[in-house]
Image 1 (cartoon, rainbow, N blue to C red):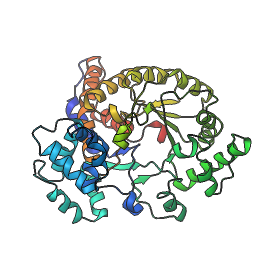
Image 2 (spheres, rainbow, N blue to C red):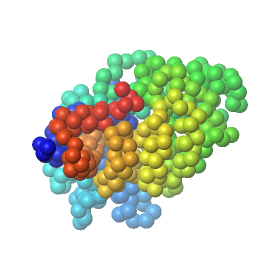
Image 3 (cartoon, rainbow, N blue to C red):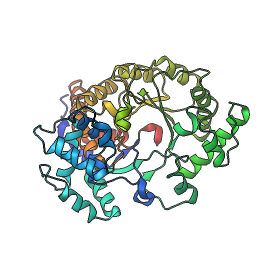
Image 4 (tube, rainbow, N blue to C red):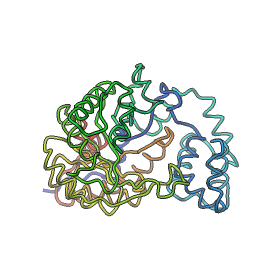
Length: 412
């Protein structure tokens, strides 16, 4: 019997319009957190993606001097170099600025940033946050919270009214990595850890994790790991993950998120822009998932070469969920490739994207560009589904998109 076919392209478009995105990995902070709230033209234009691209156009040897300039002067140089220069701004990061300015009703071909600065300076932080959330289609973001950060920690220790659109995530890097470097910071918060990885240290780290997951109402615990991270291992980070993080995740019923593949500071002159990628041996993930079958693992991998193997690993272990196209993978051509692999191997049991935004304004372009890249992939799969004889409905599409872009099964 012939089935009524729906217009899958329109159904996907309508579903995204109807659903508010839950962005499960950002570095954003609400305005209530003072200097940690990053928004507006000078923060946006001096983001390290754009500074790195600007460095390619500066005379050799001038990058270090550029890094020491005040932020507004850096922004003016980036603008003059990448947007008011002789070349069209076609890189993904450059296109992102054009998208942001267009969304805000600004002229992206302006000679300078004065119009953008005026808009930002004349808008309260609360109103600007509302504006960005509304125009980006985002309803909620998950932060990246570090209680050991000397600026951030006191906010949580003292308590404050958090914008409910910003949900907590406990970041683990500063508490676990390069042990015993974190010892003094942990002791300063009242945790009697030792320089050795003793039972006392394990107990106190677990107490730290539980205390701060509670204070933050953390949706998950996250750590960024290098490509040589191994499990099991005598390495201190691996040991602390095994003895403290995975058991705490199991007890609390929250995921352990691991973001793997960062090679730090291959070019220190670029500062935040000086990190690079590395491939990870995913047999480590197989061993982790096998040893901890009752822990949910959110996984995002930085190397493009590892993406297919991550999907295969997730097929074998239902406690592994790939999420997002992270950092250097956040380019439309690669997003489409990775999303296709995930849908073909995992169906809807993945979280296709997160923004990794550090500047509030980035939500405007990262989600616009991601949805533009992902929508044709979804439409193609739904077309295949109809061609196979499945009587697809608009409601099916809406439910799938609400599921995949609403935090995923691991966080609901």
